[in-house]
Image (cartoon, rainbow, N blue to C red; front, side, top):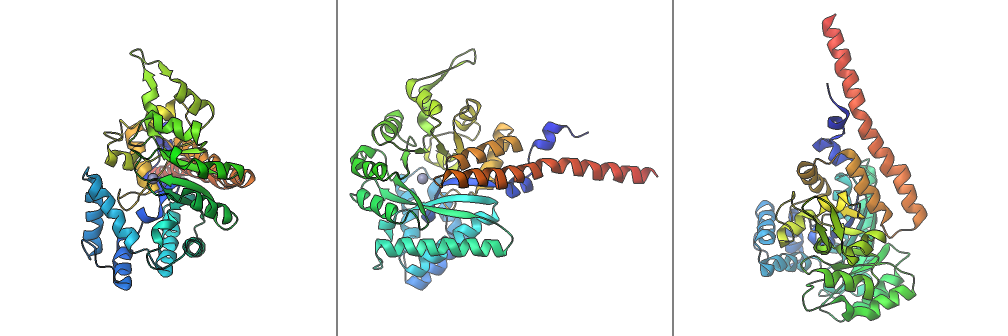
Length: 385
Ligand SMILES: [Zn+2]
Protein backbone atom coordinates (compact mmCIF):
# COMPACT_ATOMS: atom_id res chain seq x y z
CA UNK A 1 0.00 0.00 0.00
CA UNK A 2 1.21 3.47 -0.83
CA UNK A 3 2.09 5.41 2.29
CA UNK A 4 1.27 9.08 2.62
CA UNK A 5 5.00 9.90 2.71
CA UNK A 6 5.73 8.10 -0.53
CA UNK A 7 2.68 9.56 -2.19
CA UNK A 8 3.96 12.99 -1.23
CA UNK A 9 7.26 12.40 -3.03
CA UNK A 10 6.77 14.12 -6.35
CA UNK A 11 7.13 12.31 -9.65
CA UNK A 12 9.05 14.00 -12.47
CA UNK A 13 5.76 14.94 -14.06
CA UNK A 14 4.42 16.41 -10.82
CA UNK A 15 7.62 18.43 -10.34
CA UNK A 16 7.10 19.93 -13.78
CA UNK A 17 3.43 20.71 -13.15
CA UNK A 18 3.99 22.10 -9.65
CA UNK A 19 3.68 25.92 -9.48
CA UNK A 20 7.22 27.20 -9.08
CA UNK A 21 8.59 30.65 -8.31
CA UNK A 22 11.91 31.86 -9.68
CA UNK A 23 13.81 34.90 -8.39
CA UNK A 24 17.29 34.49 -9.89
CA UNK A 25 17.54 33.84 -13.62
CA UNK A 26 19.71 35.68 -16.15
CA UNK A 27 18.15 36.58 -19.49
CA UNK A 28 21.50 36.16 -21.29
CA UNK A 29 21.99 32.79 -19.58
CA UNK A 30 18.75 31.18 -20.70
CA UNK A 31 18.56 31.40 -24.49
CA UNK A 32 17.41 28.43 -26.56
CA UNK A 33 20.48 27.11 -28.45
CA UNK A 34 18.54 27.27 -31.74
CA UNK A 35 17.76 30.92 -31.09
CA UNK A 36 21.44 31.73 -30.57
CA UNK A 37 22.14 30.18 -33.97
CA UNK A 38 19.23 32.00 -35.66
CA UNK A 39 20.13 35.37 -34.17
CA UNK A 40 23.81 35.00 -35.05
CA UNK A 41 22.81 34.41 -38.67
CA UNK A 42 20.31 37.27 -38.72
CA UNK A 43 22.57 39.81 -37.05
CA UNK A 44 25.82 38.81 -38.76
CA UNK A 45 27.49 37.57 -35.57
CA UNK A 46 30.31 35.28 -36.63
CA UNK A 47 31.94 34.26 -33.35
CA UNK A 48 29.91 31.13 -32.47
CA UNK A 49 31.94 27.98 -31.73
CA UNK A 50 29.27 25.80 -33.45
CA UNK A 51 26.23 26.45 -35.63
CA UNK A 52 24.42 23.18 -34.99
CA UNK A 53 22.04 23.83 -32.04
CA UNK A 54 22.77 20.48 -30.31
CA UNK A 55 26.53 20.90 -30.63
CA UNK A 56 26.28 24.50 -29.47
CA UNK A 57 24.22 23.47 -26.42
CA UNK A 58 26.86 20.89 -25.53
CA UNK A 59 29.63 23.47 -26.00
CA UNK A 60 27.87 25.89 -23.62
CA UNK A 61 27.41 23.22 -21.01
CA UNK A 62 30.98 21.95 -21.23
CA UNK A 63 32.48 25.45 -21.16
CA UNK A 64 30.47 26.28 -18.05
CA UNK A 65 31.47 22.96 -16.50
CA UNK A 66 35.16 23.27 -17.30
CA UNK A 67 36.15 25.01 -14.09
CA UNK A 68 37.78 27.74 -16.18
CA UNK A 69 36.41 31.21 -15.51
CA UNK A 70 37.69 32.35 -18.90
CA UNK A 71 35.65 29.72 -20.76
CA UNK A 72 32.62 30.35 -18.55
CA UNK A 73 32.70 34.06 -19.35
CA UNK A 74 33.15 33.29 -23.06
CA UNK A 75 29.70 31.66 -23.08
CA UNK A 76 28.14 35.02 -22.17
CA UNK A 77 30.12 36.89 -24.80
CA UNK A 78 28.22 34.80 -27.39
CA UNK A 79 24.74 35.16 -25.93
CA UNK A 80 25.19 38.87 -25.30
CA UNK A 81 26.81 39.13 -28.74
CA UNK A 82 23.58 38.08 -30.47
CA UNK A 83 21.35 40.25 -28.24
CA UNK A 84 22.20 43.66 -29.69
CA UNK A 85 19.06 44.49 -31.67
CA UNK A 86 15.53 45.28 -30.61
CA UNK A 87 14.09 42.22 -32.41
CA UNK A 88 16.64 39.92 -30.81
CA UNK A 89 15.83 41.22 -27.31
CA UNK A 90 12.08 40.91 -27.86
CA UNK A 91 12.47 37.34 -29.12
CA UNK A 92 14.80 36.20 -26.34
CA UNK A 93 12.58 37.71 -23.63
CA UNK A 94 9.39 36.24 -25.13
CA UNK A 95 10.94 32.77 -25.38
CA UNK A 96 12.25 33.08 -21.83
CA UNK A 97 8.72 33.70 -20.50
CA UNK A 98 7.32 30.88 -22.66
CA UNK A 99 9.99 28.38 -21.61
CA UNK A 100 9.56 29.18 -17.93
CA UNK A 101 5.77 28.85 -18.21
CA UNK A 102 6.15 25.53 -20.01
CA UNK A 103 8.29 24.39 -17.07
CA UNK A 104 5.54 25.26 -14.58
CA UNK A 105 6.99 28.55 -13.35
CA UNK A 106 4.11 30.86 -12.38
CA UNK A 107 6.13 33.89 -11.28
CA UNK A 108 9.65 34.87 -12.31
CA UNK A 109 12.00 37.79 -11.85
CA UNK A 110 14.46 37.70 -14.74
CA UNK A 111 17.53 39.93 -14.70
CA UNK A 112 19.77 41.44 -17.33
CA UNK A 113 22.29 44.25 -17.66
CA UNK A 114 20.98 46.92 -20.08
CA UNK A 115 24.49 48.36 -20.51
CA UNK A 116 25.56 45.12 -22.23
CA UNK A 117 23.10 45.52 -25.10
CA UNK A 118 24.14 48.87 -26.56
CA UNK A 119 26.62 47.75 -29.23
CA UNK A 120 24.01 47.84 -32.01
CA UNK A 121 23.09 51.44 -31.24
CA UNK A 122 20.16 50.90 -28.85
CA UNK A 123 19.75 53.26 -25.92
CA UNK A 124 19.32 51.97 -22.36
CA UNK A 125 15.62 52.87 -22.55
CA UNK A 126 15.15 51.03 -25.83
CA UNK A 127 16.75 47.92 -24.31
CA UNK A 128 14.41 47.99 -21.30
CA UNK A 129 11.36 48.55 -23.50
CA UNK A 130 12.29 45.74 -25.90
CA UNK A 131 12.76 43.23 -23.09
CA UNK A 132 9.51 44.32 -21.49
CA UNK A 133 7.66 43.86 -24.77
CA UNK A 134 9.18 40.40 -25.08
CA UNK A 135 8.09 39.36 -21.61
CA UNK A 136 4.52 40.55 -22.28
CA UNK A 137 4.44 38.66 -25.61
CA UNK A 138 5.73 35.54 -23.89
CA UNK A 139 3.13 35.80 -21.13
CA UNK A 140 0.43 36.07 -23.78
CA UNK A 141 1.69 33.13 -25.82
CA UNK A 142 1.94 31.03 -22.65
CA UNK A 143 -1.64 31.91 -21.84
CA UNK A 144 -2.74 30.83 -25.30
CA UNK A 145 -1.11 27.47 -24.52
CA UNK A 146 -3.06 27.17 -21.28
CA UNK A 147 -0.25 28.31 -18.97
CA UNK A 148 -0.12 31.35 -16.74
CA UNK A 149 3.05 33.17 -15.84
CA UNK A 150 3.96 36.61 -14.66
CA UNK A 151 7.46 37.91 -15.38
CA UNK A 152 9.11 40.97 -13.85
CA UNK A 153 12.52 42.35 -14.77
CA UNK A 154 15.47 43.14 -12.53
CA UNK A 155 17.97 45.58 -14.01
CA UNK A 156 21.54 44.54 -13.31
CA UNK A 157 24.56 46.80 -13.10
CA UNK A 158 28.01 45.28 -13.61
CA UNK A 159 30.32 45.42 -10.59
CA UNK A 160 33.43 46.30 -12.60
CA UNK A 161 31.72 49.16 -14.47
CA UNK A 162 30.89 52.62 -13.18
CA UNK A 163 27.28 52.87 -14.29
CA UNK A 164 25.49 51.51 -11.22
CA UNK A 165 23.77 54.79 -10.32
CA UNK A 166 22.64 55.33 -13.91
CA UNK A 167 21.17 51.81 -14.05
CA UNK A 168 19.55 52.26 -10.64
CA UNK A 169 17.88 55.43 -11.93
CA UNK A 170 16.75 53.52 -15.00
CA UNK A 171 15.24 50.79 -12.80
CA UNK A 172 13.43 53.43 -10.80
CA UNK A 173 12.09 55.15 -13.91
CA UNK A 174 10.62 51.91 -15.25
CA UNK A 175 9.34 50.56 -11.94
CA UNK A 176 5.73 50.84 -13.05
CA UNK A 177 6.56 49.40 -16.47
CA UNK A 178 7.68 45.85 -15.81
CA UNK A 179 10.88 46.50 -13.84
CA UNK A 180 10.52 45.27 -10.26
CA UNK A 181 14.02 45.89 -8.90
CA UNK A 182 17.77 46.23 -9.26
CA UNK A 183 20.74 43.88 -8.98
CA UNK A 184 24.49 44.05 -9.14
CA UNK A 185 26.52 41.24 -10.69
CA UNK A 186 29.95 40.30 -11.98
CA UNK A 187 33.17 39.05 -10.39
CA UNK A 188 33.07 39.52 -6.61
CA UNK A 189 36.82 39.50 -6.03
CA UNK A 190 38.26 43.01 -6.17
CA UNK A 191 34.87 44.63 -6.78
CA UNK A 192 33.09 44.94 -3.43
CA UNK A 193 29.47 46.14 -3.60
CA UNK A 194 30.44 49.14 -1.47
CA UNK A 195 31.92 50.62 -4.68
CA UNK A 196 28.34 51.29 -5.71
CA UNK A 197 26.94 52.74 -2.49
CA UNK A 198 25.54 55.76 -4.30
CA UNK A 199 23.26 53.48 -6.34
CA UNK A 200 21.99 51.60 -3.30
CA UNK A 201 21.46 54.76 -1.28
CA UNK A 202 19.54 56.28 -4.18
CA UNK A 203 17.25 53.23 -4.40
CA UNK A 204 16.62 53.25 -0.65
CA UNK A 205 15.65 56.91 -0.80
CA UNK A 206 13.25 55.99 -3.63
CA UNK A 207 11.76 53.13 -1.56
CA UNK A 208 12.84 50.71 -4.28
CA UNK A 209 14.09 47.12 -4.03
CA UNK A 210 17.40 45.48 -4.82
CA UNK A 211 19.32 42.26 -4.55
CA UNK A 212 23.10 41.87 -4.71
CA UNK A 213 25.15 38.95 -6.03
CA UNK A 214 27.12 38.12 -2.91
CA UNK A 215 28.52 35.11 -1.13
CA UNK A 216 28.85 32.91 -4.19
CA UNK A 217 32.57 32.49 -4.80
CA UNK A 218 33.44 35.01 -2.11
CA UNK A 219 32.73 34.45 1.55
CA UNK A 220 31.16 36.12 4.52
CA UNK A 221 32.65 39.63 4.11
CA UNK A 222 30.83 39.95 0.80
CA UNK A 223 27.50 38.96 2.37
CA UNK A 224 28.08 41.27 5.32
CA UNK A 225 28.83 44.22 3.03
CA UNK A 226 25.81 43.54 0.84
CA UNK A 227 23.52 43.56 3.88
CA UNK A 228 25.05 45.95 6.39
CA UNK A 229 26.68 48.52 4.11
CA UNK A 230 24.48 48.38 1.04
CA UNK A 231 21.14 47.34 2.57
CA UNK A 232 20.25 44.56 0.10
CA UNK A 233 16.72 43.16 0.36
CA UNK A 234 17.90 39.75 -0.87
CA UNK A 235 21.17 37.92 -1.46
CA UNK A 236 21.98 36.65 -4.94
CA UNK A 237 23.28 33.20 -3.96
CA UNK A 238 24.38 33.93 -0.38
CA UNK A 239 25.37 30.28 -0.21
CA UNK A 240 28.62 31.00 1.69
CA UNK A 241 26.55 31.96 4.74
CA UNK A 242 27.21 28.31 5.53
CA UNK A 243 30.72 29.41 6.63
CA UNK A 244 29.09 31.09 9.63
CA UNK A 245 27.18 27.97 10.69
CA UNK A 246 28.90 25.35 12.84
CA UNK A 247 27.50 21.86 13.12
CA UNK A 248 28.89 20.21 16.26
CA UNK A 249 29.75 16.51 16.50
CA UNK A 250 26.53 15.83 18.41
CA UNK A 251 24.50 17.34 15.55
CA UNK A 252 23.57 20.57 17.30
CA UNK A 253 24.10 23.74 15.36
CA UNK A 254 25.60 27.09 16.29
CA UNK A 255 24.96 30.18 14.18
CA UNK A 256 27.47 33.01 14.04
CA UNK A 257 26.24 36.60 14.37
CA UNK A 258 25.87 37.12 10.62
CA UNK A 259 24.09 33.81 9.96
CA UNK A 260 21.79 34.52 12.89
CA UNK A 261 21.02 37.97 11.49
CA UNK A 262 20.26 36.55 8.04
CA UNK A 263 17.89 33.98 9.52
CA UNK A 264 16.29 36.30 12.11
CA UNK A 265 15.62 39.02 9.53
CA UNK A 266 14.30 36.45 7.04
CA UNK A 267 16.79 37.63 4.39
CA UNK A 268 15.97 35.65 1.22
CA UNK A 269 18.79 33.51 -0.16
CA UNK A 270 18.59 33.07 -3.94
CA UNK A 271 20.25 29.65 -4.01
CA UNK A 272 21.21 28.17 -7.39
CA UNK A 273 22.36 24.57 -6.78
CA UNK A 274 23.51 23.53 -10.29
CA UNK A 275 25.28 26.82 -10.87
CA UNK A 276 27.02 26.52 -7.49
CA UNK A 277 28.29 23.05 -8.46
CA UNK A 278 29.77 24.46 -11.65
CA UNK A 279 31.55 27.31 -9.87
CA UNK A 280 32.79 24.99 -7.14
CA UNK A 281 30.74 26.43 -4.26
CA UNK A 282 29.53 22.88 -3.52
CA UNK A 283 30.88 19.45 -4.51
CA UNK A 284 27.57 17.64 -5.06
CA UNK A 285 23.84 18.22 -4.72
CA UNK A 286 23.80 16.12 -1.54
CA UNK A 287 26.54 18.32 -0.05
CA UNK A 288 24.93 21.59 -1.14
CA UNK A 289 24.24 23.85 1.88
CA UNK A 290 20.59 24.13 0.84
CA UNK A 291 19.89 20.93 2.80
CA UNK A 292 21.09 22.42 6.08
CA UNK A 293 19.68 25.88 5.35
CA UNK A 294 16.24 24.39 4.71
CA UNK A 295 16.43 22.37 7.93
CA UNK A 296 17.36 25.49 9.88
CA UNK A 297 14.49 27.44 8.30
CA UNK A 298 16.52 30.10 6.55
CA UNK A 299 14.46 31.94 3.90
CA UNK A 300 15.92 29.64 1.23
CA UNK A 301 14.71 29.70 -2.38
CA UNK A 302 15.59 27.52 -5.39
CA UNK A 303 16.76 29.15 -8.62
CA UNK A 304 18.27 28.40 -12.03
CA UNK A 305 20.82 31.22 -12.52
CA UNK A 306 21.78 30.31 -16.13
CA UNK A 307 19.55 27.67 -17.69
CA UNK A 308 21.55 27.34 -20.90
CA UNK A 309 25.03 27.15 -19.35
CA UNK A 310 23.94 24.87 -16.50
CA UNK A 311 21.67 22.78 -18.76
CA UNK A 312 18.92 23.22 -16.20
CA UNK A 313 15.38 24.39 -15.48
CA UNK A 314 13.40 24.90 -12.28
CA UNK A 315 12.08 21.35 -12.64
CA UNK A 316 15.58 19.94 -13.03
CA UNK A 317 16.78 21.83 -9.95
CA UNK A 318 13.96 20.32 -7.93
CA UNK A 319 14.55 16.85 -9.40
CA UNK A 320 18.13 17.01 -8.13
CA UNK A 321 16.99 18.20 -4.70
CA UNK A 322 14.25 15.57 -4.42
CA UNK A 323 16.85 12.93 -5.19
CA UNK A 324 19.52 14.33 -2.87
CA UNK A 325 17.36 15.21 0.12
CA UNK A 326 14.16 13.21 -0.34
CA UNK A 327 12.13 16.40 -0.63
CA UNK A 328 8.37 16.09 -0.85
CA UNK A 329 5.67 18.25 -2.40
CA UNK A 330 5.48 19.98 0.99
CA UNK A 331 9.15 20.94 0.70
CA UNK A 332 8.60 22.18 -2.84
CA UNK A 333 5.67 24.24 -1.63
CA UNK A 334 7.78 25.63 1.20
CA UNK A 335 10.49 26.79 -1.23
CA UNK A 336 7.89 28.22 -3.61
CA UNK A 337 6.04 30.13 -0.89
CA UNK A 338 9.40 31.40 0.42
CA UNK A 339 10.26 32.71 -3.02
CA UNK A 340 6.85 34.29 -3.53
CA UNK A 341 7.09 36.00 -0.12
CA UNK A 342 10.48 37.39 -1.18
CA UNK A 343 9.41 38.70 -4.59
CA UNK A 344 9.65 42.43 -5.29
CA UNK A 345 6.01 42.91 -6.39
CA UNK A 346 3.54 44.49 -3.90
CA UNK A 347 2.49 42.57 -0.79
CA UNK A 348 -1.16 42.10 -1.78
CA UNK A 349 -0.13 40.63 -5.13
CA UNK A 350 2.37 38.28 -3.49
CA UNK A 351 -0.30 37.13 -1.06
CA UNK A 352 -2.77 36.52 -3.86
CA UNK A 353 -0.16 34.50 -5.81
CA UNK A 354 0.49 32.38 -2.71
CA UNK A 355 -3.15 31.81 -1.79
CA UNK A 356 -4.76 31.64 -5.23
CA UNK A 357 -2.03 30.03 -7.34
CA UNK A 358 0.79 28.37 -5.38
CA UNK A 359 -1.09 26.69 -2.53
CA UNK A 360 -4.05 25.44 -4.63
CA UNK A 361 -1.55 24.03 -7.16
CA UNK A 362 0.22 21.98 -4.51
CA UNK A 363 -3.05 20.93 -2.89
CA UNK A 364 -4.18 19.59 -6.25
CA UNK A 365 -0.95 17.65 -6.73
CA UNK A 366 -1.01 16.31 -3.18
CA UNK A 367 -4.55 15.01 -3.70
CA UNK A 368 -3.63 13.01 -6.78
CA UNK A 369 -2.46 9.95 -4.84
CA UNK A 370 -5.96 9.61 -3.42
CA UNK A 371 -7.43 9.25 -6.87
CA UNK A 372 -4.67 6.98 -8.07
CA UNK A 373 -5.43 4.75 -5.11
CA UNK A 374 -9.18 4.83 -5.78
CA UNK A 375 -8.54 3.94 -9.40
CA UNK A 376 -6.32 1.00 -8.55
CA UNK A 377 -8.71 -0.20 -5.81
CA UNK A 378 -11.72 -0.12 -8.13
CA UNK A 379 -9.57 -1.75 -10.80
CA UNK A 380 -8.66 -4.67 -8.55
CA UNK A 381 -12.27 -4.94 -7.33
CA UNK A 382 -13.39 -5.28 -10.90
CA UNK A 383 -10.89 -7.98 -11.66
CA UNK A 384 -12.04 -9.89 -8.59
CA UNK A 385 -15.59 -9.83 -9.88
ZN1 LIG B 1 23.44 35.12 -11.00
